[in-house]
Structures are given as C-alpha cells and as structure tokens.
Amino acid sequence: MAPGAEVEAAAPNIAPQHEQQVQASSCSSVSMRAPPSCSSASTLLLLLLLLLLLQGCHTVVSIKPDTSVIVVNNPEGAGGGAAAAADSDEAVEVSVEEEEEEEGELEVVQPSEEWQTLRPDQAVPAGSHVRLNLQTGQREVRLGEEQLKYWTHTHREAEGLQASFSPEELKRAMKKLKEDSKSVSRDQQQESLSSKFRPMEELKKDMAELDLLVETDLQILRRLLQQLNATGVTVEQQLNILLELEYLVHQVDNAQTLCSMGGLHLILQGLNSSDVRVQENSAFVLGSALASNPVVQVKAVDDGALQMLLRILASTQPLRVKKKVLFALASLLRHFPHAQHHFLSHGGLHLLSQLFRADGFGTLRTRIVTMLYDMISEKELMTQAGLEATLDASHQERLRQYAQLSLQGELLERGWCGLVPELLEASEHDYREKALRALLAMAPVCLTQFRSDGSLLDSLLALRDQYQDMVQSEMILGEESGYFSEMLELVNALRLKMK
Picture 1 (cartoon, one colour):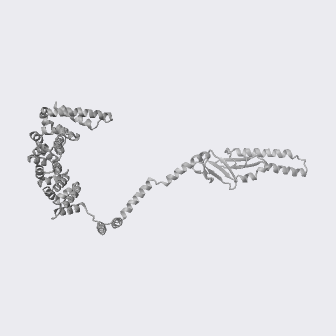
Picture 2 (tube, rainbow, N blue to C red):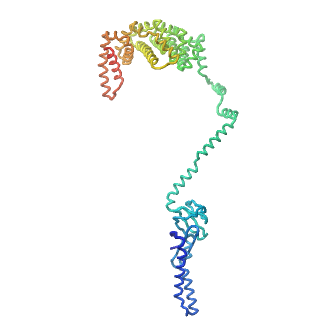
Picture 3 (tube, rainbow, N blue to C red):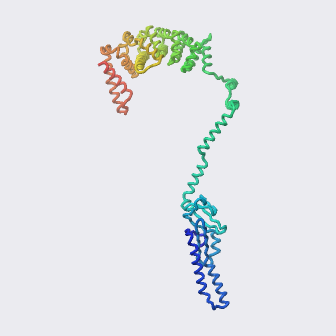
C-alpha cells in the first residue's frame, strides 16, 4: 500500500506490539544470515543486506496520546519508499469514526469541505475525514464522504439565512426609521412637499397662459347661474346651460349648492317659459336635483314646485314636456310623505286619472302606474319597519306622516281600481309587468272590484295561457327561471288573491 492510502484507526495499544513484532522479525532475519565465524568481507555483505532489509520494511508509526493511534504501513518493495511519498502530496489520510474527548479540555471543530489544521487540544465529530500531512507533521480534517453529499445544499441554505434579517434586526431598523422621521422638522417636511407638488395658484397661472381655465364645481355652478340669469340670454344658450346643470346636479352636494345660490328659483322660472324646449330641460334639471335629496325636496315644496308641476300637467302641453314633468313629480314625491300629503290634497290623483284616460299610447300610463306603485310600496315598507324595530326620532316622524296618508282610500275613490287593469291590454311585456305589480299592491282595497270585473278575469286567463307557452319555450332553450316565468308567477298570484 502506497503512502497516503486510507486505513481504519487502530487502538492505542496496537502500535507498540506491532513495532516489537517488526523489530523481532528483522533481528531474526539478520541473525540467520550472519554466523559468528564470517570474515570481514562477509561482515560488509551482511551490513549491506541489513540496510536493504531496513529500506524494504518501511514503517510509519504515529501515536497521539489524547485522541487515537494512526498507523500506516507500506510493505511493498524497496523502490516504493520516497517516490510514493512524494507523489501522494506528503500526506496520510484516514477516516475517523470516533474521537475520544477529554471532558472539559477538547474543543470540537466543525469541519467543512476544505482541509483544516487540527491542534492537539481539538477533537472532530464522528464520520469526519482526518489525514496526517507528512510535510508539515500536522493533522488535517474535512467533511467525510457521506457528509459531503449534503453539505452543498445545507451550506447554501445557511448562507441564505445569514443573508436575511432576523426579527430583532428588523425591529431595530424600524425603530431607527421612526426616530429618524421624528427628528425631521416640520419645515423640512414642508420643503419636501413643496418640491414634489405645485400650488394651485401656480397651476392656474400656467393654465391661463395656455388659454386653459381650471374651475371647481362651485365656480362652474356660479358661472352658469349668472349666465342663466343674465338679460339677453338666447334660447340656445339657455338650453346649453340647462344641459350642463343637469349633469352637475346628479351629485347631492351640487344640487344643494344650487339651492343655496338661488338656482332653484331660476329653474322654476324655466318651467313657465314659452319655449317648450326650455320647459322640458328645466323639468329635467329639477327632477335630477330632487332625486333622493331631501334638502332639495323640502326647498322645492316650500317654493311651490308641486303646484307648478301639477299646473303644467293640467294644461295642454306636448308629450315630451309631460314626460319630463312626470319625472320631476315622481322625484319630488318619492320617500317624502309631506309632499305626498300635499299632492293628495291638491287633487293630484284626479289629475293623474285624467292623464291616464287621455293617453292612448301607454307611455304616460306606465309612468303614472309606476309612480302609484312606488307610493303604495314605500308606505307598506315603512309600516312594517315601524312594527319590527325601534326607530329614531326622524323615522318615527316619517312613520307618523305616512300613517296620516289615505292613499289607498283615494285610489279606490278616484276609480283607479278599474283604470289600472286597462294597462294589461298593452302589447309590451314591461307595461303588463308594471300593471300586475300595481294590481297586487292595490288588492287589499280593490279586491271586490277585481272580482266583479269580468274583463280583468278574461285578461288574466289569456295572459296565463300566453305565458305558459312562453315558459315552455324558455325551458326548451334551457332557461328554467326566465322573465316569462316571473310574469306567469305574477298572473297566478293575482288570480289566487281574486279567488
């Protein structure tokens, strides 16, 4: 075996015995070849043979008292001594499975993939690879073969963990960041903001140089109202102004700002214009401003908008004007029992019944029936809410106002129980839907008239047969609960109440 080959570690008491055996064998060989009667020439020959024998039996013994004994033998021929040691990097490598430690004295070294020099007071873990460097006479250690298989992956993970930040480091960094931010003065913060953003005055100046004007909604409303109130304004200009106002007043704040600037008075003046286009657009702006805006609703009732709208509906006006006026009237009455009370006291239902009878196309009829259905439904919802929960003062006041309304009694008195069924004869399904929902809402007070109305029963039977066929067509197309199924449910629900 050449120098540098790996052997297993031996016990501490093996080396002395082996050394004695080698010496004994060598001496026995010499004694056999040198008898006492030899001449001087024979003595020289024996000395040469002895030198050759010593060169062939090349033995290296290394004893380490505090750890283990490492023995490396080379029983090969004479020519393998010095040359083999030079070719093996002047080192002897062994694999150490166990290192006996002296408790409290030895330091355990953690090997790596590179050779590390061991001091006499150091020990290595089991499975490490240990060698004796013959050039330096020092012991060296690195990871064993099994450990090297997993060292690369584990080492990379360890490096990744070392590159990351621990929770304590992150806490210290955040604390330092807060302290740095507190140390910055307000002047420095203001200077930093000023460097990022430009003031509005500077932007307006730049816009003015580019013939651009930056206006807020408040400024636009003020400018439009000034133009609308100016003397000599043309009809075309009024139409353009009203169109811009209608876009703005959809926002609740803008509609309230319009009232505070006196714009509502100008809009009501437009309802009295001799030009039907101005009347139409003024009613459109008024309805958009009133929609779901209690502040504007109260202001409009105080300014007499309800009486003005009813007067326009009672007069001879084009259909497009009446449609916009009905839109404004519905926006004023929705969720406003005080306005609904004034509407009933001023004969509003009687006026709507006249419009219903005079409308032969069904456009106004549908709008009127929808408005009546909304008024009945919201009163029922408010009554149910008042029975189920404890409401605040505003809701209690609204509930009290709804209780003072006799809407369904007025409907029965004004003949609406016989007028609404006429809308079922329309060909449009949307018109029929509105009529069916209104009839279901009116059933508690109109049930007797419904049962005695033969034309209503015939209409319901015809609608049932028609929608049953349409539902079958929907099911063939894979629509189990389509629009016509809902229509059929409304027809059957009304028929069931009439039985």
